[in-house]
Image (cartoon, rainbow, N blue to C red; front, side, top):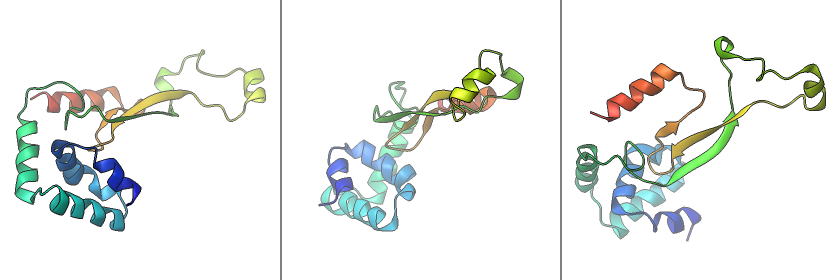
Length: 140
């Protein structure tokens, strides 16, 4: 059995519904087909059931986990921080000696996204206003 099926066997029906609805397109076609077959034939989730699960969670008042699917299955990793010119500080800019020692050094910040539905929970390179707008739209 392939590794993706071993992984998704651990997912709840709710997590599978959100994976199917929002994140399945990020997989290669063969993997998408295996995931769809598993969801439909092994777990017995129809398109109607999946849509109902997603709708129920959307109207849930839970604030735990991912704002979209409420999963705690997150990817947390460092990315190169694109320091906006308007907020550059002297402390963020390397001295010539530091640049000579490590010319490929770029500031790193943590990015967090949901492993289930692909929702980007925190992106250090996203503007404050975009982040605020995204947060407010999920709090309705």
